[in-house]
Structure formats: C-alpha cells, structure tokens
Length: 187
Ligand SMILES: Cc1cc2nc3c(=O)[nH]c(=O)nc-3n(C[C@H](O)[C@H](O)[C@H](O)COP(=O)(O)OP(=O)(O)OC[C@H]3O[C@@H](n4cnc5c(N)ncnc54)[C@H](O)[C@@H]3O)c2cc1C
Image 1 (cartoon, rainbow, N blue to C red):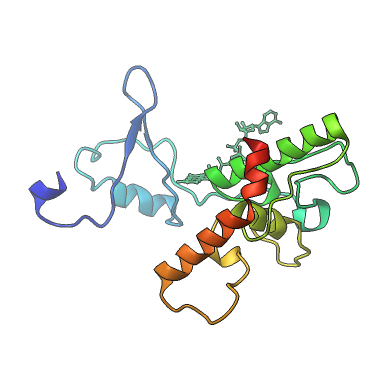
Image 2: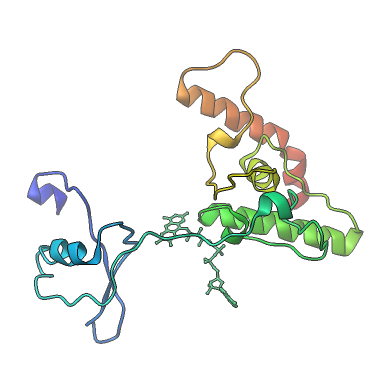
C-alpha cells in the first residue's frame, strides 16, 4: 500500500473491528492531546471515515501507580507488610516486558520465602530487570513510571565509550555475565 502510493505516510490509523456486526471499530492505541472537536474534524477526512460516527475519542493514557519509591523494596515486596507483593504497572514500571519482569521478580521471591524463608532472587542492578527493581524502590521525590532502557544501568567502568552500539553491547555483555548465577537458579 505504502509502495503503491509512492510516498511516506505521516501516520497510520489502525482500525480493529469491535463488534460482530462490523459496525464498531476501535482506533488502536489512539493516544492524542487533540480536542475532541478537532479529532472529529481531522479523522473525518480519512477516506472511508467521512460519514463515521465517533463514539469514543483518543485520550492520552495515564498510569495509576503507587509510590513504590517509598513503599516497596527491590523484590516488589511491600516493606511494612512482608507477605504482600505488587507487580506490573501499578508499581511504576511501564510496558509489557517491564510488567512481566516485575511479576517474575515478585513471584520468584514470594515462592522463595514460602519454601525457604529467604528471598534469593535479587537481580543485579547491572541487569535491566535489577535496575528497574532498584529504580522503583529507590527514594525519589519525583517518582515517575519507567521503561526498560540502557539509561537506568550504572555506567560502564573505565573510559566512556562514545559509540552507542558498542556501549550498549558492553552493557549487555556485562549484564549477562553478572546474572548468570541467578539465571541458572531460575532455569
Ligand atoms: C493505549 C496504550 C498503548 C500501549 N502500548 C504499549 C506498547 O506498545 N508496548 C508496551 O510495552 N506497553 C504498552 N502499553 C503499556 C502496557 O499496556 C502496560 O504497561 C501493561 O499492560 C501493564 O500490565 P499490567 O498487567 O501491569 O496491567 P494491565 O494490563 O492494566 O492489567 C491489569 C488488569 O487488572 C484488572 N483489574 C483492575 N482493577 C481490578 C480489580 N479491582 N479487580 C480485578 N481486576 C482488576 C484490569 O481489568 C486489567 O485486566 C500501552 C498502554 C496503553 C494504555
């Protein structure tokens, strides 16, 4: 389609059928700050949507999360209630894999405590899983949700590597090296 038109699109609107009769379509992931009236004006220009009736407009999504930087430790465990763990975006991680990682850390440690009485899966801060856990559990007056990214890892030792690709490769290697013992235990 893009090739047929011969030009690069500014944006792509994905419509997902939302009812059996195919009368209702969802504009997938439509996050925008445009006012509703403006959305109607602009989206009605899309070929095929000239006559569409809009039942719901796009809004920016807002995460609801607890103040983990005060409440949780780096196993997503509520500090003042040791038998309670949190996982997912409610802890201040953002994204699919991030939420999964928090669930994994919380579940592994909850089962450690259940079976052995001690937590055994505190991931190194040199791994993204550990760095995220550290980020959400470190005091922070301006606590905001965080994605997995290289910026939350401690800097590499030694001279700064300017080349991004090389730097990221080194960070990834360091991470794999550091957590090998932890991974063996999980497997
Ligand atoms: C429009 C949009 C686009 C996104 N795109 C991406 C993307 O491209 N990539 C990415 O990585 N992340 C994306 N995200 C973020 C991602 O969806 C979330 O970070 C992730 O789904 C969080 O997972 P979760 O399990 O913590 O929470 P959720 O997926 O929100 O699951 C929480 C569940 O709990 C249920 N629940 C709530 N209250 C109660 C209750 N009282 N009792 C019982 N159940 C309850 C809810 O119904 C829901 O099913 C997007 C989010 C939005 C809103």
